Amino acid sequence: MEQEFKNTPLLNTPNLRRNIAIIGAGASGCVCAYYLLKEGFEVTLFDSGTPLRTLLPTGGGRCNLAHAEYDPRELAKNYPRGEKFLYSVFSQFSTSDTIELFEELGIKTYTQPDGRIFPESNSAKDVKEKVLARIKKSNFIKEKVLKIEPLLSGYKLKTSKAEYFFTDIITATGGHFGYEFLKDLDIKIIPPKPSLVGLNCKHQDLSGVVVNNVISKDTGLCGDILFTHFGISGPLTYKISSIKARADFPYTLSFDLAPDLSGLQEILNKNPHKELKNILGEYFPKRFASFISGDFAGFKGHQINGKTRDFILENIHNFTLKITGTNKGEETVTAGGIDLDEINPKTMESKKYKGLYFIGEVLNIDGFCGGFNLQNAWSTAFVAAKNIYK
Ligand SMILES: Cc1cc2nc3c(=O)[nH]c(=O)nc-3n(C[C@H](O)[C@H](O)[C@H](O)COP(=O)(O)OP(=O)(O)OC[C@H]3O[C@@H](n4cnc5c(N)ncnc54)[C@H](O)[C@@H]3O)c2cc1C
Image (cartoon, rainbow, N blue to C red; front, top):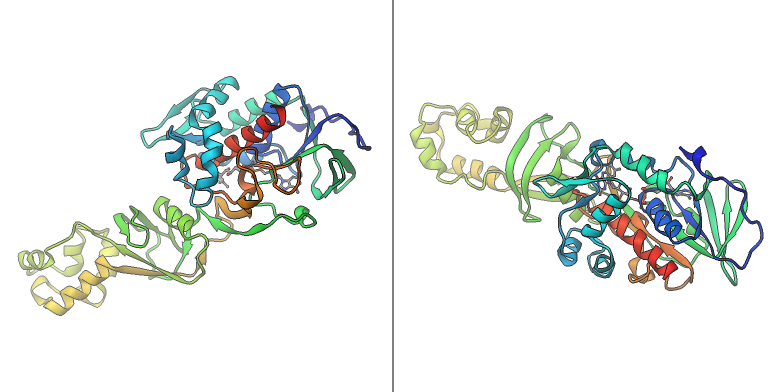
């Protein structure tokens, strides 16, 4: 796709015209380019890789591009980092603006019953192609940016191959590619931590077992736990990993595995000749029922005394896991990035460096699963572009 871009040689001397570089041709960088090109600006996109490749795996290849929460304040509640900052951003560009943007790009959307918004094509590849078709007029330079140097007016940008000058720089480098190129700037960076990721813990081999409708006592969330060979995963685990993204390891998580299970004594009385693992098998998958019954799995209902019953109940209603880390390489987003105190939320411009903007996941903003992270990319991209062309 990149060969379709106009890859003209760039100015190698500062000039008086406003020329804009966007570092990072991911979700936020490309949409920012779209808005700026629409207003007649000259835009140069830098990326060390292929533009918009980061969009392809989103939503399992279907691109969950937003969430049907239309109240900006409610929407912002889905971001463990960035909520207050996003009030201002979402008041300028929120979910309905995203839908409008995609209509403008020729992409119709639909909303799933769980609120997730997808393109009608169910294809991230289609979204990628439609966005790229609208930003063909930008210069695309496939080079890694190594350094940004502030000048008296504008910035010198050093890449692996050359040096360039720009009046404005929009940094849209995401959360997974490092911050090395910013090291000479006085910009505070919160060290990145994995978020929306599986959690590591030791347990007997429960790999493949799913326990439904548990309550995470630490977060108040309800959902299913999927046991994997390295620990736990699934939507509930991802949400917990997001809330606990900045917690130090190890930490303990407690769960109520069967909030509706009460009156165990009565159940035992009604099943005096049934083994405990089979009694609990009515409430849990068979393998898990054996595991949670422990040494008493083969005991019959009438053999379970009060002390054992309470021990089992404690295991069920206060089930704990010692979390030792996150599953390497699996994180969906990073918690951390440019400290939000450095940025004006009305413009996305650095408070210290005029003409230097930060958008998307490079910021210390991350949301839950469900379209919130791409919403952050589109919204911050729009706000930066609007501030430049207004
Ligand atoms: C598997 C997966 C599934 C996901 N699914 C969803 C989903 O369905 N919905 C949702 O809302 N979010 C989803 N996300 C998160 C979402 O994709 C990101 O939050 C979003 O892409 C961030 O956009 P961005 O523009 O900030 O950064 P990115 O899209 O990550 O783009 C950053 C770009 O900057 C370039 N770059 C970085 N450093 C440099 C440098 N020094 N020089 C040149 N180029 C550089 C990179 O090559 C990259 O192309 C998913 C993430 C993953 C990993």
